[in-house]
Image (cartoon, rainbow, N blue to C red):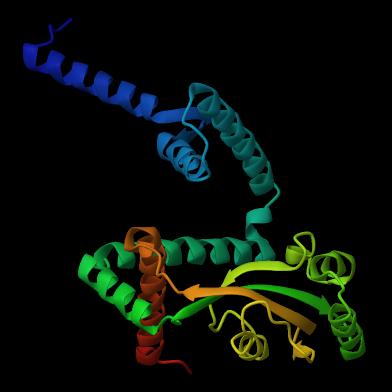
Length: 262
């Protein structure tokens, strides 16, 4: 037999190492079909995003899941289900979703919101915020007549908190005697409610029921104070998310405007 040269030995060793590395890169083989490490890594990444820790136990569970999935997929393909039009449509839908998510993540990464922009948006929001906040209670009922009866009870000395606990339809404040905590007038509150609330003085209750899309309210203002903007660091993430969403929506609108749709 011919003796292998030193160079040939090195080539053979390199080939063996490459084969070993390729085998190590696979999670498992199912009927000869390799499950790549990248698939396991993707599942681990998704689990981590949901708050799970990367542990050997988690990796084993995911490995078992990937093997099970591959077994079932192979059986489905044997039956030709991958050729089914409905299945193909679902696969295409998921492929599009993955590409869209990848494109949006790439866009956000390539177009970060600067610290200066975040600070400027914060100052703008701070300048436009209402000057006062109101600590209010309310009782929410279905009809105007019910609200009028409650107002009459209150004028006779009825206890606002007890009546709210008994009759209010607002589950968020009912168990607190109608307490809404501190409210800042703005678009997150129904306009008729805000209009009535800001006219009340400390300790005053509405003389007439206030109607909103939720029903009829009896409102009491307990206190008022100068509005305080939350610290920048506290709302920075929220502002960043809002600006990123706006940028993405504009980018999508621009793409659609350029697209030829027939």
